Image (cartoon, rainbow, N blue to C red; front, side):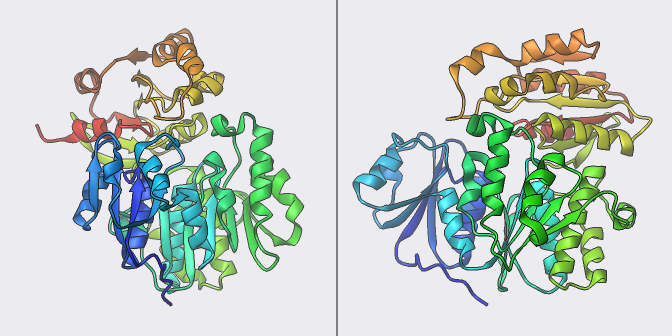
Length: 443
């Protein structure tokens, strides 16, 4: 079944097209035969890929002339201000504008939409769900916030069935724009506090989100998460629970290639979804068994001086802790490094106490300067916290911690000090991924 978007006269222009979600949405429109252009401050492997698909991309400072003469719709990221030159140009020319969340929300109305949300585990769970549907011959369309090897190393899969599998982010309350038929929730945590200020507001937002699931829909929720349990309990028989205490957890542990109890939990959610849709159990387990992980999620990049280098997107204390624990479980006798670039001053400030304890299972810690997120920082947060201060606190805790102000200095230190058999986790949601690539590059 085709679900064409009738934006077929004129171009859709994306302000901030290099983002992982925006680029997936751009690919969706391209798959529908729509012409796309876009702009971003810096080039990346994502923008390079889009250019290969025929997208005209403007790199550098946003300028009003980047909006094509025949633009019919302008889609912008939530971080774009109303003073952005391209946004202002669209308004002055009376071109229709939509935020990323609004555009996605319109698409969710055209499908039987399965959303995956939660503070942690969204991308992995979305990928697992998509593979289960693919194995079950439902041919889903997939929009996900990471690259999936099984989808040609892409963050988008074009399907011809009636199902849309969507990673639904709660930042800026984006997920409240969506219309899920089935909603999967992995957990609720103190994340995106720049939007919500406190956990109680996060729980209220998730309650509002789950209320959008229709009476004939389903909610698949993690019973092991107390906050989520309290929120989802109110939706009665519509809720299908999953837990690490389920008997299927042991079966999944034996077949799953990605490490950590958190990933067994993510796979249980996909299993429950498959059963709801009537997919053969054998097909569900085959899908889970063939999954090899996603981009920047405990992603093995190569070996340097005998050390194993992994890239991981984790940037919240709970995610960092889970990844280090997974590495410790997989490599119990090896020395574990965590090379971390904090992501956003505000997150570091809000969760300061959690960051001090989150590295406890690592043997060596190397910190880089905070990745400054454009449009989401405050002067007070910048003045209050930084990586040097975190280094000092970790040393007080007795942790072997170093701070370097550049990727080059960090790379030199790691290369000079790793031992054969060490496991190096290069972590963060900013541009630190390039460091993982540099560490394993052929010299």
